[in-house]
Image (cartoon, rainbow over all chains, first blue to last red; front, side):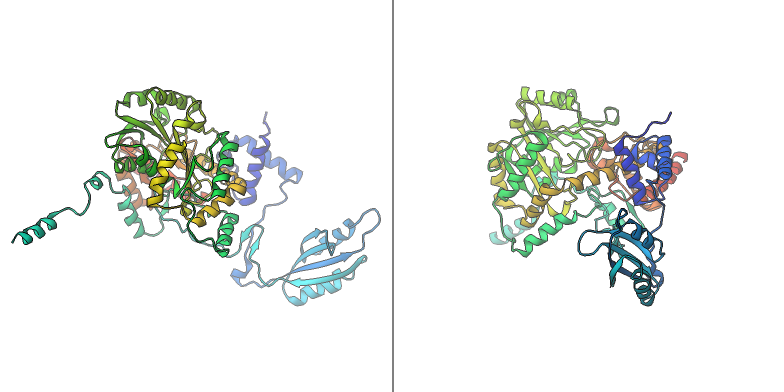
Amino acid sequence: MSRTPHKNKREEIFRILENDARVIPEDIATMTGVPLTEVRKTIQTAEEDGTIVKYKTMVDWDRIGIEQVWSLIEVRVRPEREVGFDRIAERICRFPEARSVYLLSGTYDIAVIAVCKTMQEVSEFASQKLATLDNVEGTVTHFMLKRYKQDGEVLDGTSKSKRLPLTL
Amino acid sequence: MSAISTIKTHHKRDVISQRMKLVDASGIRKFFDLISSMEDVISLGVGEPDFATPWHIREAAIYSLERGYTMYTSNRGMPELCQQLARYLQATYDLEYNAQSELLITSGVSEGIDLAMRAILDPGDEVIISDPCYVSYRSCIVLAGGIPVPIPTNPDNKFILKASDVEAGITPRTKAIMIGYPANPTGAVMPRKELERIGKLAEQHDLVIISDEIYNRLVYDAEHTCIATLPRMKNRTIFLGGFSKAYAMTGWRIGYAAASDQIIEAMNRIHQYTMLCAPIMGQMAAIEALKSGEQDVDCMVEEYDHRRRVIVKGFNEMGLNCFEPKGAFYAFPSIKSTGLSSEEFAERLLMEEQVAVVPGSAFGKCGEGHVRCCYATCLDDIQEALTRMSRFAAKYRES
């Protein structure tokens, strides 16, 4: 019977995968000292119950000359009785332009990170698709000028080691 | 005529002191020069973390510069740092040191070792060290006029310093026992029981314990025992620690010594005439590290542990027997199966496979037959180095 690894070891397994989804279970078992069968079981369970949402690759499209326009769109929303902001948020999530959608506290309600090919597409998305939804009271669109760091990764972070090659 | 002959005599005089002839040149100079002329080298030969100092610590130091903290500090170190350190030692080890009289901020543990030796040794005094051990111990003892007495350790006893062996090395001239665990180069951790036995010997023979605990925070599935916490040991121990390894702060050069006020006063007297004080910028960074660096240490330890397991498994699978290091960030595999000496192994591995390791012989006679491999290197590089080393080991085992 396969045991469930200690909570900290489970966290360790997920941290390894969050940092690099390509690490194979055999290597994770070596790195954590958790038996291979338990690593496999933990990953399989997490995939099934949605703890592991998806395995993805982070691409810097700028490096291959693919232009993308990123924007942060503030959305002010009138909440609905019983469902609050959830129904409108779910509607916004369905647009493929909406890369991320968050409910916030503060001066506006929903933040949408939108990624489009052109500025024209962004403005059409904001003005014609978002602003026209029922319950949306207004939008403010901020175009992102440069991405320095995303999901914990510095985008031009190809820094070489500055250490001396040999020290005692 | 007599004036001319005097000048001739002066020309024959050796510029370098006799004492310096007793100090060996670095055992890695040759390799350093070789690596510098090569490309695509993966180095497992470094002795420092591959992380940069956590940003909040760097930022604190930058802010201190902006505010004009660019001057000397008190010889003993900034009062705020000493107080933070006293609190840290109390919280971590339940050790009570007086921040004004029993702590000294040094320029790294390296300076602390030198100060400790010079403060306690008279010419001809013997100091027991483990073999292999960190390279500074021997040199600092010799420079202070002492005589290092190496006690052999080996993989069969997990490279720990056995009290029975230490006892055999004690003579009427023995003044101190130098302990450096978790150990560079072996990664060994001293079990509490053995430290207790060594402590008893120190009491019986009235010896000073000098304990280099720079790797105290880097232990894996093991517990580090600070010898000063053992009964009656605090007063006879010079406890040396620092920020370099746990907080990835090697270049800042900040360490500390904790000992009786008598010893700290003596160490400080040397320190004030030589170093004067540890760099203020580093001291400001160290304050921040003590205040809020705990999480950084935990993250780095987890990362090192992953790499440690990968490298040790890799060595054992390729037939380079490697005992499990429980501390620091070094693995110390045996390379005897290749039939090469540790220096030959390191040199050929570098030339043929572009992987740099440090020959075990650089750390003492008992290091022969081993190489030191630092796993404070990214996993991809460790895995590539293991692939190359496996190919290399197989080639020499067959030939």
